[in-house]
Image (cartoon, rainbow, N blue to C red):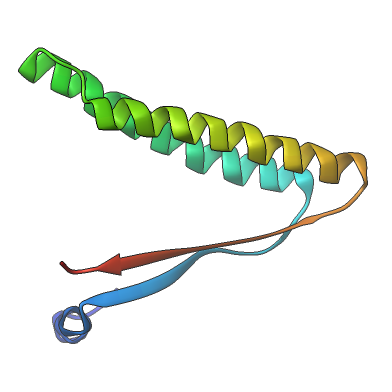
Length: 102
């Protein structure tokens, strides 16, 4: 846990990157990691759009579009994982989150 001073020093930088995923994984573990992350992100956008519909009477088109893009990405990634599994190979996954104060 960061102290307030460390957090303040970091926010003056205004940008940071953290490794979210970094390593070699079996196809089974890769499937679990990828599907969990993407499914939760899809759910976030679905809830956001539903909330907009309840509050404003209309869905959030950007959330609907992003959820569809994520579904397509999930399908492509699962095909790649299946290919690795059929070949008896592992996968190297890396994901970095970049945050910038704007």
